[in-house]
Image (cartoon, rainbow, N blue to C red):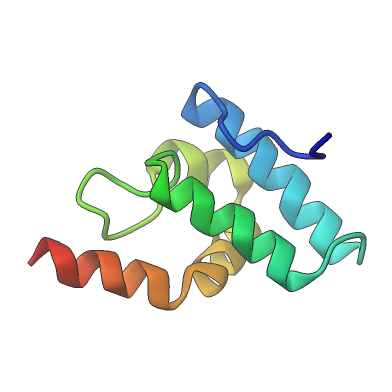
Length: 88
């Protein structure tokens, strides 16, 4: 059984999952590759990014806080720029 929900129904639930993932990463319970896998998955399933794909959804960003949002952006890295390029 997976520790995190890969398919949260709402962005509010996605934010709660992201908080768990980032906190576990900071405590050393999961590796960066696992955290990145989940964050990219949420971005692909349209739970994380804004509608235009250029940034983090405001609901999620406000729920997870500044430090976690910064880390999420770092974990997304090339994925986010790839999405932005496809939208042009």
